[in-house]
Length: 481
Ligand code: CA
Image 1: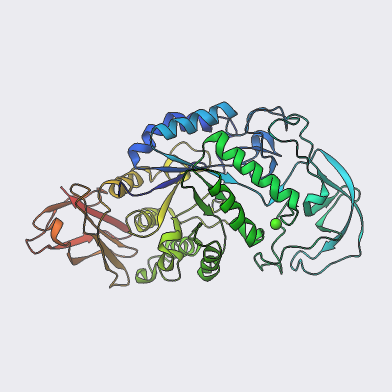
Image 2 (image 1 turned 180 degrees about the vertical axis):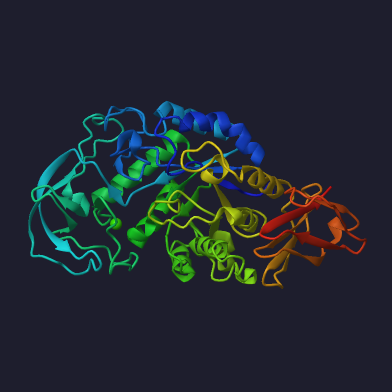
């Protein structure tokens, strides 16, 4: 059984461009282990078009992990290749698995242009062409002069892409679909067809591309001793591609790899279909739950907390849901801006960390601070909740979702984890109390609030009954004293 699985997303959008993240991570490995983290998701580790200013999603060269002088720098935003490898090694020695971020949808920062026949497509309906075919000058040749042929001699040109968003001849921005190419059909249907997201859109029907991305995946897994992948922007890529790629990766190693996909859609049926089509070899981030938490945090205490899990992925696919509160894209000023309000964050984290279902992913920004700041106002509360997950959140779960504004649940504890079991109670409104039965393991015990919000103890009688309470807009988590 072991301890609960807990992931940390080890970056935020506004982390300083100072090439120090891998160094920080190595120093931090022991602390992460103590916090109960047993898996980290690291940012894209390869050279982006923006050099050290690239968060990593503007992929230039998948093989340049901070090793070659390309895009004006040897290190990436996060550091040098050897520092990356050292950090991974240190994590492994602390029993922490490593998930690497895989960005296959687009490439950016091509080395040279070439003339390509293309047709403009409408921005809001990419199925419809907005012009006749005509020649454009596209930035679509990737030669990797700084790397040469080390690790791979594959060079990219327009035939490996569906389209691009810039004509250098007219200096005009539009969606240009390369003539003779079609957007993939099995992608998200937003904007008619959401195959195109940005940059040079990778053509995943091109056999040479498919083979190169498999070659790269196997190289990356082996070279960096990875334990799995976080797959970026999968709703913009044909569905069959990753099913196949995941199989290839799993067959190339003895390890039991872990895959998490980012499919940004608030409709859980869409997410569940994707999981089923991948034969459940993939977990997806629970985007609908993120939005429930977001709305609850913005409802001024008027959210019906009994419904907080309604419509979520974790409710119907508990084995394949990765629950989270915020990430680098939901941060202020980013594409999916929807940050959970500060007051609600402890409640939100209790809802992902202390439940039986789903694998929670803690956001770097909530622990270390967002916007490049080196502190988080909720770090203390978050630390307590992570400790509660690590030590106490085991055993049967009994819900008390019986009041609009005060909900609670019990984890009854198990034999494997000494003194485990807890009661979580929270309110988005005025606070309150409930009589709760904690089950046999915690009967006849004195419980304290590990969050420190409540200072008096609760005495549970021999039948397991006690009265538990919490403040307004707050969560309390009761564990054995
Ligand atoms: Ca695409």
